[in-house]
Length: 119
Length: 111
Image (cartoon, rainbow over all chains, first blue to last red):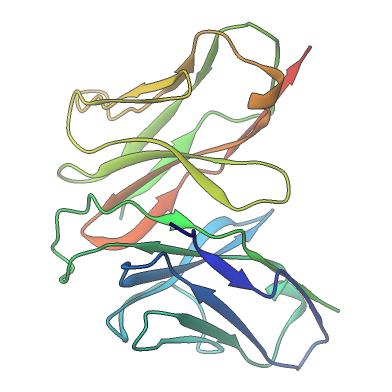
């Protein structure tokens, strides 16, 4: 079974631009989560989508947004890029049954990440 | 909220040495616990997990036991190899699909 794929793998943008990152989950997985990884802040949760609905959101400004399509593929968008947005953006998918009060045993499988550099 | 504290690195060992990376967590109830590994230039790979107290997760010679009484999930390996050099992350999840990670421990194994 193919793993989580993310495109593109590398991006270079300038301040003020916007960017869209894509994530294709493992077949059959309906939950997609996004994380930002930086040397200073470590791994931080951005948001999670399940069945095309955002279920959870981390503490990031509104410039960070996402969506999920009917085939469970997800995109995240960052508008008005800032230098501090330079990071590795990781996507993870899981089987995740519906409802936030699930058993929480659904393991998240990560893609290789998209390395975003903002100049 | 939930939090994870990991042993600070970097950790440098010789091949065949014994490895312990400490991890403690703060959470109410019974979160699921994970260790992920990140090799240079790659994403995170699940190494092992445990979902209830006293469970032992194991994979590739690595082990970790869910200790509810000490809120810990320490990673151990009896004999490390050069190929184990990577960054290791302890993480918890509870309720919502939101992993909370420790800061990561960089491990270097010298031949």
